[in-house]
Image 1 (cartoon, helix red, strand yellow):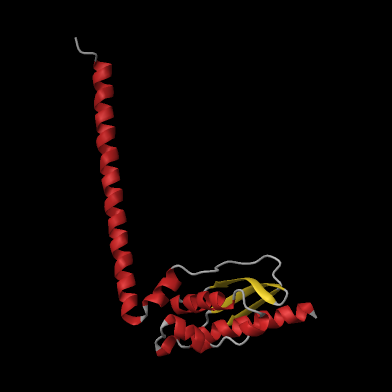
Image 2: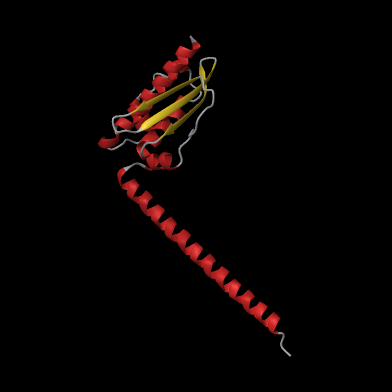
Length: 168
């Protein structure tokens, strides 16, 4: 004699297994599709920007805020992008530097590179970093984004000025 409860439970188990397998398959297909879209976007960006610009924009270094920073500056560029830079200074040497931005990829990349160039330098050394230093690391930028490194530099100068004001 067949137990109808166990048969029904068995059917539900198989059905659930098929449903989960189908969902897993759909999830994998969705992830593959998203990976393809992301790669297409990156490939398109690489037609315009250097690999370093794309890498820094997608994986910026020193992104974030510093609570109770020794100095901070915030500047909005002519394009509407804003960068904010936070500094911690120990014996006139930048011990930590972070940034936040609402900007485009080249602005993110410029600020990321700038923080890497400024970190561990003295305030005086950091104040001498120029937009061409950032452009050199990034491998250049198209003309319509050439203002992005200057926005980062101006923001660093504001943060340094704020540090000096606070220090007295």
